[in-house]
Length: 320
Image (cartoon, rainbow, N blue to C red):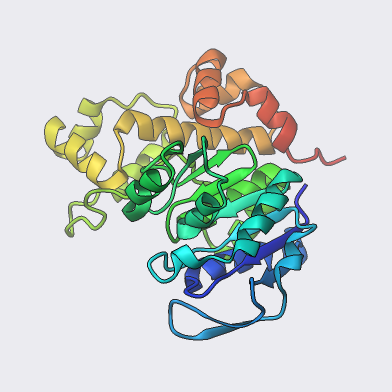
């Protein structure tokens, strides 16, 4: 269980990513059914820390905040502005936190902080897509995923850029505190409660021309998950040739119709497992997988667990 959270910033810290750490872990959400963390903002040298945006953040606490933190957040910073000058005391504190079992969470370029502490050696990890090649070159033994929104390996969580930090943070809340807590935080932040880490970081054409977007079709597919959705049928509904439809679908979603549907069906199954007592066979049918074995296959592939284990861990308590 995560309770004490220490977010560490250095000169050149990215303001948005700092805001992500504070929004998820720094605000008491108990008034709307969410969690409350003991959040501390700290720096290797307390005092004014200049952000990448050119304004200072005044930090009162030093690295002693890491001594008993359950979670240490390495916030993104300008890696070309002093990345090689990270204080040794900071790197040592990260190693010590990891050695005693604390979670480490790097947002975007914060992954380079963990890399320089030697904590990504031999691990799966990610960072902003612009820097994945650089990270792979810096840590040759790391398995750097250039496409993932976030990657969890042991108690080390790394995320891609900007909004992917929100997804990773909510994933951590969901898995360590509970699904209800993550939903409460997401609801207050007005963001989706869950995007899977394996989704693509970016799509080829994120802003289709007016009249060409498949947004309406995607919404219809979500509402009809139990139906069979072949490429030919979807292409006809979109009034496109199959070839054009397949190309445009990948442009807008970053994946294929089959992979997108599988993710949507698993996400809906998660909701039903959390909020209902429906049998797994029935849930499999409702979300479009047809049978429990097929649902189990996709659950294991996407989430690394089974529907029964997921329900046991995340289902809301039954009202008496």
